[in-house]
Length: 132
Image 1: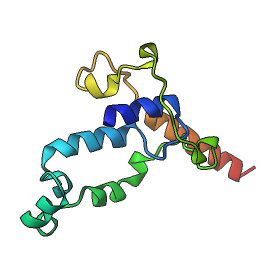
Image 2: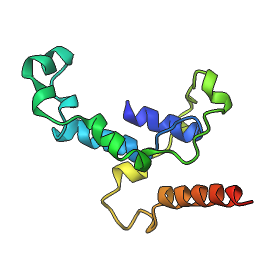
Image 3: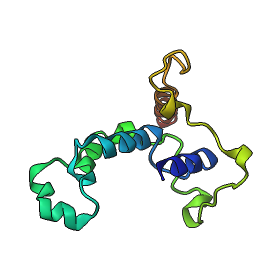
């Protein structure tokens, strides 16, 4: 599912408020057992286990780090806001998620994080327009 959402973010980069880092974090923590949100098979299991009282919430972690998970390209007023986003079904349009599947192979990834660079560029552009 997360891979499918990532593919949609590649097709519609301004339609999502979250970024790739959020999807990778969600993927990692859904398997880490660090947060109770992902323990058990359903909400009833979590209630029976008392997970809410004995573990931390992943969503609190997200809220504390919300700026790290924001998509700098997101445009709430974009034409996608009122549409159903349909994926392109041609195999040649699928992309390999290099940052997910090769993130520990330093020889394949760019040395500078492009998401951070883009975020700083957008912030700088906004600051310049505020002073204009």
